[in-house]
Amino acid sequence: MDELESPVYPEIDKVMSFYGFEMDDLAMLLIIFWLVETIIGQARPHLGSVDLTLYLTIFVTGILFAAWRGFKAGKPRHLLEDTLGLLAEPEVMVVTVDDRIRPAYLIEPSGRIGIAPADRSARR
Image (cartoon, rainbow, N blue to C red):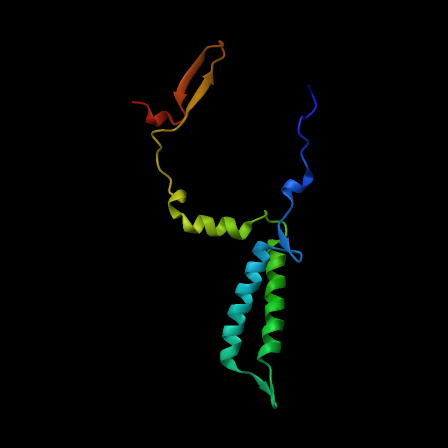
């Protein structure tokens, strides 16, 4: 029975995207556009009688989004989600002694198996 009973399809690990953008990219595009529009919208740049707000907003958003894509290249998938998850749970980054840690199974050279806590300082 070496063969799989249920085949594993490659579509399981497919990236969810919207017009080629992953959800992280789409979120960053909207955030960057909102921030740039807020800043440039208050400046109200004009060239003669032409209002450059929309043109500059789209141009600067494109540059910053290209920088985001360059930064994200080679990083793990769901980088933004994982980073926001870590920021939402700061207590997971605190280093403390865990008294209820799963025991480690030690196999000695004689073949004897012993059970000991993984953190030897937790022994009393």
